[in-house]
Image 1 (cartoon, rainbow, N blue to C red):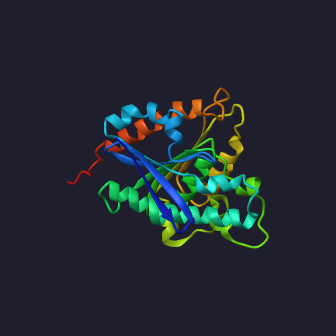
Image 2: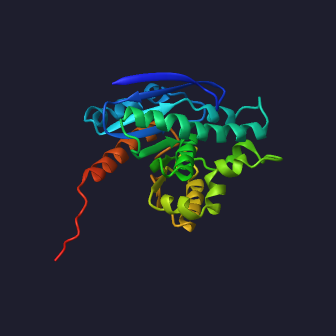
Image 3: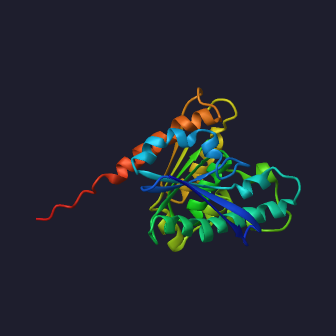
Length: 255
């Protein structure tokens, strides 16, 4: 079942779109690559390879326009504006997209999983670290996590510090960190063409130093930074994770 909705976001100051595939199951928000839109994953056949999970009612897939991703490589605005829109994009996810997903799932508190490739991996990890009360698990595929490499260093604003998990995770403490320590972040990448596993290791080390459960996985040198790779990998993770989530939890024996 496919459905698409659009609305004007005051936070982003533009029209936005959210697409959904599936009728029941674990909600998964898929962030597009850098400049992708809400239907990118269908054009690149990701929905096709996820069809068995969708038809079985095990997952509901959601995606949105990558408004912030488009700005990463744009020279039309200042560095400061690009960091500002990245923060606004995350606030849009928290206050507009996540509530829409939960309404669609008829649950006020269902945990959402986040995933994406390349820049989409950055956003999936960022929103999970920023909003662990909403996002319970993240899968970053072929992730690019260092914003400074793409955008540069701003002269005077702190939006990059609150948007980039490499930079804000070390500052976390208190109940926010306690909640995040109950979540899980999987950082997976190939080592073929256009891949850089070093960014995933750096992200994993940053999470690990704060006691946040994570795992860095290499797919090997035969896997490139490409849709062929991501189509092969995402269905396997979602299959394994939804099976594990469906297993009954062990009950402590009492004498």
